[in-house]
Length: 212
Image (cartoon, rainbow, N blue to C red; front, side, top):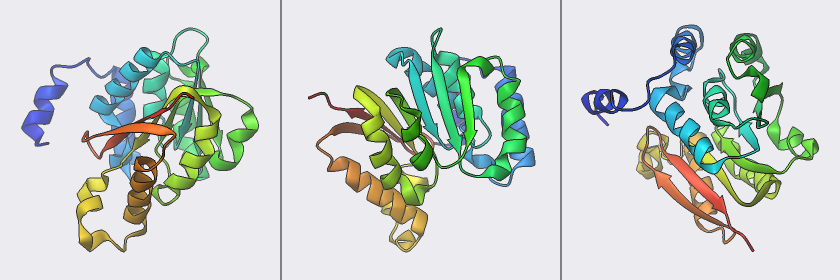
């Protein structure tokens, strides 16, 4: 997507709330990997998907600066809860204040730690999940989360086109690219799920856990 087309899209969708714009700017100024933040377009999509799915409980793997968590929490109905895990404890000092001072702080449970180990211990059945953590462990994370997801629930996975590297042989030895390719192949062959990949930003896969 070129910049002109992206600007056109952003001018014709729900405006980015000021708080999220300030978080986006702060993320890009104060963190090393600012481009990882979801941003205006994906953020509004996440909010709308939550409003469509109407989950009671959401699990997020990979909080980063908290932008996507806040967007999803915006879409939650009264009593809804989002549990978000960030494995990099160095992000906590930046992220926690932004989450706790947000208008939806009461809907977000932010935890530092490995979701693959900690999420099952919550004893919660989730209606929706969003994977945006370590690409090398996407398959492991998927297999951890799917049993926690209700039948008919939705799992979103970010970065599944990985800047186009998934079809570029020069990146075939890159561990992150390998992880994404393994994940995409794994999900495509999984009889428990149906899925579609949206070519939005860096690729967003929407997966629905089949009902038996």
